[in-house]
Length: 123
Image (cartoon, rainbow, N blue to C red; front, side):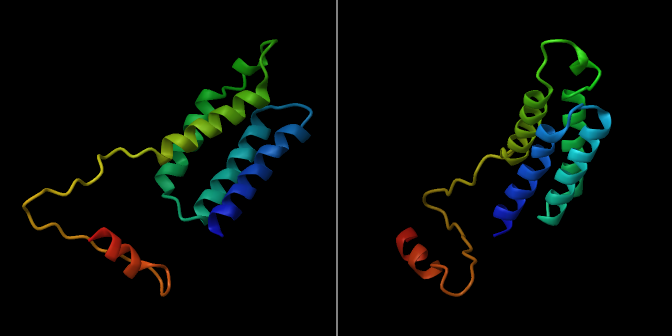
């Protein structure tokens, strides 16, 4: 449910690019503000959101986009997509259980979400 709302809010923000006749700094700021608001409502860390805004602004410098032959809409969409993907990439290696040692795992979930079934398959 949250991911669906987040995706639709980001899509709505990016659709403003198609509706804008001129893509300037003001349009880019309003789009990034909407995306940041959607991410914050989805409980994304404030530092990650501010980093996303800064990186997208840097990648989509509006003055660089003024040159002929540059598709501003595609470049902005690509920068937002790349930053969202970068946010989701793990920066730590996943936990690898060690054979011969006691390894502790915690399974968390709501009632009826399949914890017991998962634990029995895991064992």
